[in-house]
Image (cartoon, rainbow, N blue to C red; front, side, top):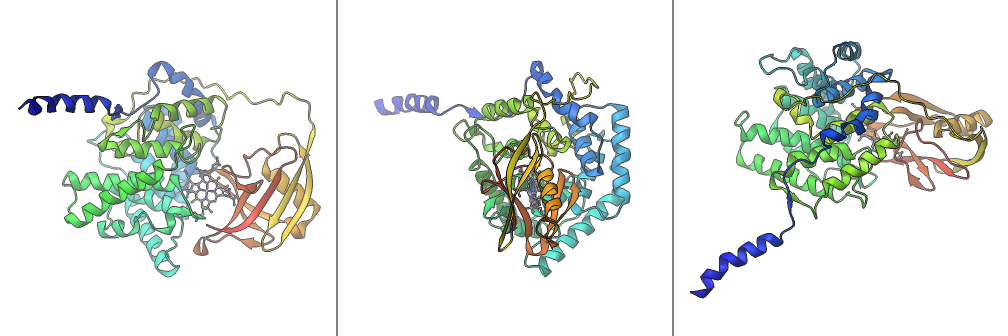
Length: 429
Ligand code: CBY
């Protein structure tokens, strides 16, 4: 009998030993909102090259509750301009839908049903391409996830059976060169969680088997995301952390304990990077901001969940970074690797970016170093070198490396250093 008295006591003791659980979303406190100003200024002041950037910015501003008439008008115009050009990819269209539909009052029906049916067709085209080209979509799984997310949030048609099959976590499209893509996994978790919630709410029907699979996929993707956590708290790298945080917020029904994820540490590292100006590209700022104030892309059609916008927007232009030292030159080693390696030494002004090096090399030797570039929402993207073109049907691309390691920035933003070994390599992802 004495035992039965002791049991509850032992239970209480054991419970108190379990590390405190994180069920609440960690977010920047209101007093610290000024630390987010560099992000907001970058988003508001940027001159958008493309509608997709505008869509990302509009979505992000609306989610955190910044509703400024003139900014919205300007952005909506840009989003509409891009919508007219029918060559939007599926994920770009999905983003346009998310942005235009975000945080509208709930009695308003979505004003762009034709965009949703266009997206259904573009999603079908992705699947068709996968059937013809060994499981390779027209774009990538990040965009397929955006597609499902937008279709799920705005009542589009999609087959649960298909979604279950497509988003098996072992699918090669979640990996680039054998490395799990945190950005892609996070977007898939958001999409799958939306689908799961609709099943739970009875808004869509499916059998127990599919439901179990969806829950299983979410769980295993979250595990993969958590295993990409770095010592400083970043998940994947700086630019995937915001979306990874969103994925962890929506999936932490079962509460993550501090051993699994120290959210505060992630937040502190990101804030530190903001103050160093790391998010100077509008899309980078737009993708990190919602998570920092506890918002996720699943909040877009719950008007009540969109932020209150307690921000002090100053329309001040970002302060340009003026180099302190007088202009000087640095020497870098540059090579193009296909099967053979073509190398050269290049002298460029201090503060030059990777693209400047490629241009200087091209001037010196057109045959070995000629290249083409296109503008993407993240800046310049190398499409061909020596006439050899990247192609998503065979997963080929031009990879950027420094000292043999892949870079986490594009050619237009990566600032090169004296004595550095830079490389563009013909690769498969
Ligand atoms: N967005 C997309 O469709 C892009 C999805 C994305 C997962 C994206 C990263 C994440 C995001 N948040 O947008 C992505 N990259 C993809 C899918 C790809 C592949 C594109 C081909 C395809 N079929 O769609 C591919 C080829 C594997 C790829 N990214 C290549 C590269 C390298 C580009 C080199 C070049 N040729 O110019 C590069 C520089 C990596 C390298 N070392 O070679 C690269 N990507 C980087 C660094 C990035 C990050 C950009 C960060 C930055 N500050 O510039 C990225 C955010 C992103 C854009 N890629 Co890709 C990932 C990260 O580091 N966290 C949807 C659309 C609607 O906007």
